[in-house]
Length: 239
Image (tube, rainbow, N blue to C red; front, side, top):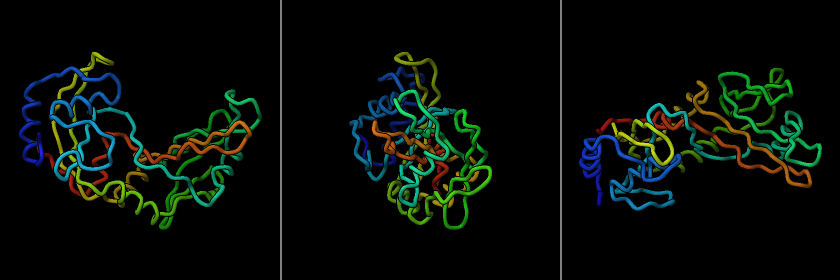
């Protein structure tokens, strides 16, 4: 059982020396399950440390997989209904003419919304993060101060990030656990910079109930898992 960072470094070095290791579970969560098993860490879904003061994270090197950092509806109240009706599109999943709006937005460019001919992007100013079309900045936004509090609460722990090369797929996937980093001190300023660079995405998931009312599936702020350590002030390689 590991309880300290030194324990982790010692055991992870042994795992690295083992070379390629077959996954203990098929699918995206296989890397985390495999590493936890090898380290003797019991699997759990609790938002807290996995050993000592540290929460353990793992990712595949060069993976394009996305992680949801946080979900929050935009302000003001009713914004999801407003943008769904203005920029959404009809879906064959529903037996009505109401619209849905599913799109992953970025600050780096305008994103086409299905076949509507409309495009949206994210824009930032000193106080807020807003959704904009090609002609106007909408009054649909997240204020930076409430986001700061939400993200700092989410990333209050220290983290160890393990990175592995992978080959194969499914139940036959293998990992080579190559390196590990200690990260801490979530930087909201870094998050905003990554958002402006197009490395943090805003995932709109606005559907509808059978009666046509808006169904918010959770607007997510997302990042590629390999970029997540960039959110922190301290990023120190330990293996």
